[in-house]
Structures are given as structure tokens and as C-alpha cells.
Image 1: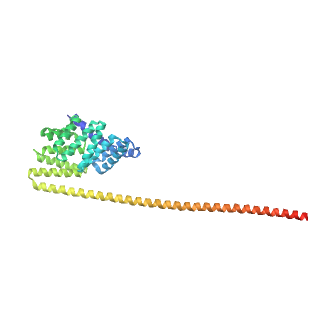
Image 2 (image 1 turned 45 degrees about the vertical axis):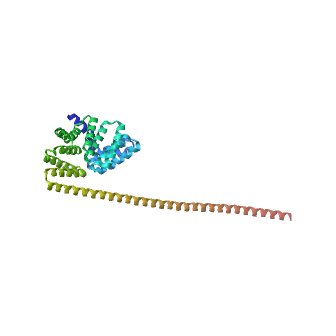
Length: 347
């Protein structure tokens, strides 16, 4: 059982952990690497490093990797970066964009025949379906992922939960949680805690709420604010289930406050983006003006140079003409003297 769980953990966690340890060298390699598939894989490692600590930076690198992969027609790169961006969109609540990117990743991974990656996309689509409240579709996607990846145990827990076998789900989720914590995989610990909280919410709502509080703490540590909103909503539902409406109202207010802060932050980022675009446009205009001024100065210098060359040519021509005329005058005077002497001799 543990062997199968480890397989899934290795699939999703090992590459990320390797990237965390090698980030400085990866950045150096990225700077020196030519625009080929190796560079795309280096960018993929960097995006995995930034996934939790700086999602915005991860998104920037992922889009660069996707652009490079499309330029190279690197199918695996296009698929991997599409899946990564889909996961970021899912965390931010951009459901339509996430589903579209998951679909693109699925088509591309099917072209490569990489079964584990195909399973990961099914897993992502299952998470997408849960957020939409479509549990039958989520179950279908999770079971497809299980079948593709040889019934990995942590996904099995989610599938058992949706099928109603809550005791088996709780056991499997707990086993996965132990292994995840041993390897310090925060993101997967969050997913497992949420699944376990969902299982326990029916019979042990207090335990479920404690698990959600753990999720809230970890979400703060890795700065996953959109996930914190979902946790608050889950706690609101639990309080309502227990008839604790005052606590539910207080938690809902915290969710709304966080939602407002995220909206304000998004607007600030949009404004900053517009300011950056404005500054870039101004810099471009200044550069164009500078180029025009430089061109005008070059043209003016060329005109002066041409005029100077022309003046020198005319001067040289006049000098040569003067010397030639003077020589002719001397010959003429000399000839005149000879004729005069001959005339005197005849007389």
C-alpha cells in the first residue's frame, strides 16, 4: 500500500524538491542555455520552485516556457506548461481558463503517450469538478486517474469518499497524509487535509474543523490566499451544519474581508501593469526621438562633409587650371620672344 502511495508522491513531488535545492544553478543555466528543449525543461524546474512561494513568478516563467515550447514545437513542454498554468488558474478560481488549459494539456500528453502525466491531468480535472460541485464528474475523473496510474492510494481516498465508502476513504487519506508530511510536501498536505476534513465532516464536524484550521495555517505559510477563501467557506458550512450561526457569520465576514483584499490587490497589480506599459511606451518614444535626432545629426554631418569635399575638389581644380594657364602664358611669351628675335635677324 505504501509503495503505491510513494509512487504518486514521487511523481508530483520529487521534481519540485530537486528544483528547490538547485535554484541558483538553474538560474545560471537558464541564462546560458540556448533556446532549445533543455532550456524549456530548466524553466519547468524553476516554475516548480516558485509554485508555492511566488505563484505570480511561477506563472511568468510558465508562460515563457510555453512560448518557447510552442516555438520549438516541443509537445511535452507545451503540455506540461499548459497543465501548470491550469493548476495556477484553478487555485485562483479562474475555472473556465483552468478547464481549457487542462483540456489542451490532455490532448498534448496523449500525443506523447505519457501515462503518468495523463493521470495527473485527470486528477486536475477531478479537482476542477469538485470546485464546481459536480461530484459525479469528479469521481469519474479520479477513477480514470486511478486506472491510468495503477490505483494510487491517495487518489483512491478521494474516489472512495465520493462513492460513499467513508471509512475506507478516511483510512487511505490518513495514510497518505503521514507520508506527505514525512516529505514536507505542503501543497499535497493541504489537498489531503481538505479531503480528510470532507470525509469527517459528516460524523465528526469538530475534527473536520480542526483539520481545516491546519489547512488555513499552511495556506498562510505558502501564501495561498485563494485557497484560504475556500477553507473559510468550508468552515462556514460546518458551523451551519452544527447550528453555530454566530460563528458562521463571523467566519463569513473574514472570508469577505479576504476576498476584498484580493480584489484590491488584483486591481493594484492591474494598475501597476498599466503604469509599466505607460513607462515602456514613454521610453520607446524617447528612444525613437533619440534615434531621429541622431539620424538628423548624421544627415547634417554628411551634408557638411559632402560640401567640404566639393569645395576641396573645386579648389584643386582651380589651382590646376591656374598652373596650366600660367605655364601656357610662359610658353606664349617665350614663343613671342623667339619670333621677335627672328624678325630682328631678318631686318
